Image (cartoon, rainbow, N blue to C red; front, side, top):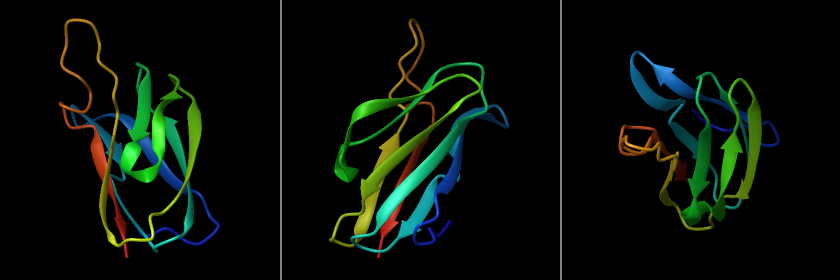
Length: 107
């Protein structure tokens, strides 16, 4: 999914076809762009967003049935930058290890 300058990129977090995921999980932006992700939690559990490579070093909570905005400046260097859900439920594998990851491609 390509980001349009100034418009928030819409994502969903939750269980899709039996798998934890972000939809869309690949976002393409231009180097240096200011990017806002509007993430809706479609699941019944807390989800979070994190990406130190994009400057999002604190976990951003996406509450059950709610949404959250994540804003960052795209790196000046082209490449692929990962993001993930760092939630680690007690007694279960982390959401990221179960596939709730994605990438921002900077051009």
